[in-house]
Length: 133
Image (cartoon, rainbow, N blue to C red; front, top):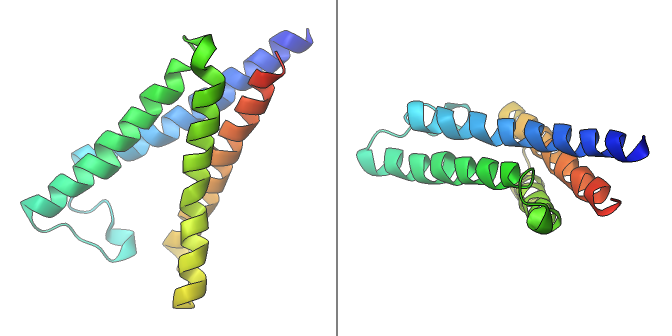
């Protein structure tokens, strides 16, 4: 029973992380002009929208697909989960460094910092659970 419960935990955490990244990615494809409005950034030029669709759209959808691949390809799952957890947790580290340097931490930055810690922690937890099987 422990293995099936652990497997359910890995699958649930993995799917939740993939949904998080998919949400960001598809919103970037759909609304690149206003995606970063909460950070006082508005993409007014085609070049700016291209950048947002590439990084916030394409990269995050690729992350989601990579994370979902762990449900199919068990031999690479642990490495993918560790790598995506580390990359995800790197984002709030950058936000915290920025908050110290700039002496400010606005509401949007705090929200995304917490979201990234939760998702990165979920991926790290999934990696740990996966390593126990």
